[in-house]
Structure formats: structure tokens, C-alpha cells
Length: 252
Image (cartoon, rainbow, N blue to C red; front, side, top):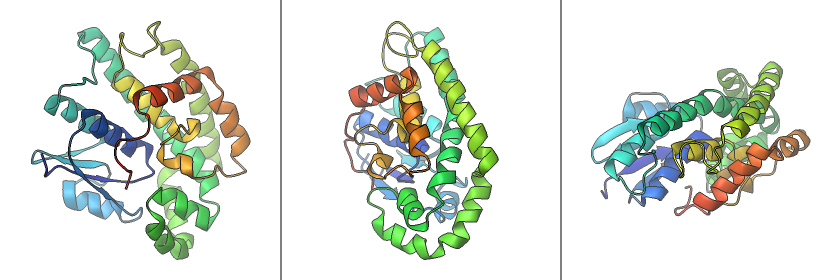
């Protein structure tokens, strides 16, 4: 297992899903934090697909955070990330997909509109903790890369408005989805809880979360504080604190 390798973006909440899964399984591996802007080329080179994270696991190359979590659970069954009950397992997988399709991109769009307005702050945010050298490289070219990133992710005024609405709608539904057990699927922690806590991390800013070390832009802070006070966001933060805590390995 010493040959296991993760290529990842330090600040990405989707990439944090993979890091959490690796730490939860206590699987020995090497991490390569890729500089934003170069990550598409790196991802294509190692997997043939344009996105990170990419995990090389026991000689197999796996793209996409959801696929990585499934592969990790197959390779290292304990502790499980999927309910044993087939109905609850299907529920967990469906909730993971729903959150990934809506909440994840919405958080990113809304944050990018505000974060990318300042070159120094944008470069520091994009590279995350441990990426200070990368941020210094990115900052002088921010005028060129920022518009490209904005277009790619729809990070404009309309994107911000739609992103905010998706986040609000998701929090309302998520509150209804939480079971009497305190989890989203069955009576134990699962991939659904991991996904909710991770994708809401840029909003809830729990201890040890990659972006928590970066200040929230003043233009975004009031809205961020309001959304973070929602009961579902408070629940997601507690899930992180209880089941993730301070990551077992550094993000870099």
C-alpha cells in the first residue's frame, strides 16, 4: 500500500472528501497538492480525465471523490462508510449524489465571486494551507487566470444569486433529511454525512478545515454568517467536529 498516491487541490471541498476517506481508513499514501491552473493537465496526465482528486490505489487509478470513497470502502472495509442495510445504503448514495450535484457547485460559485475579486486573497484562497509558494507564483498572473476560472464555474453575479438560492434550499431540505439517529442514513455515520459536512465546510468553517485558515471576504461575511447559523449547517459542523476533527494528515 506504500504506492498509493493522491493528487488533489488543497482548498477544494470535493477533494476534502477524498482526504477524509483516506484518513478515516488510515490508509498509507502520498499526497501531491497540485497548483490550481495546472490541475487539469496533471489530472489528464495521471487519469485521462480533467478533474481532481485522483487516487492511485493498489495499482488502480480512480477519479472523482465519490468513486474514490467507494473504492476505499471496498479496499478497507472497516470502519464502513456505507450502511449495511440495502435501503439505507441506497439512501446514503442518493443523498451524496444530490449534495454533490447542487450544493458543491453552489458553494463554489458564490465563494468565488467574492474571493476572486482580490488577487492576493484569491491566490491564497485557491492554493490553501501549505500552498504559500504556489500563491506567490499565481498572484502576478491573476488578471489572466481569474476571468478563466470565473467563466468555467459560472462565478458571476447571476451565479452568485443562483448559488445562494441553492444553498438555502439545500439547507432546508437537509434539515428535514436528518434522521432521529442524528445521521442522514440509518443509525451510524455514512458517506452521506461525510459529504454534507465536507461540502458545507467552506460555510461552517470547522476547526481543521482547509479554508478555515483563510479570512472570509468582507463582502461575503454577513451572508456567510447567516447561512452558517441555519440548523442544518450547525449540524454539519458538529458532524465534522465529531467524526473528522483535526485531519490526521496535513492537507499539503
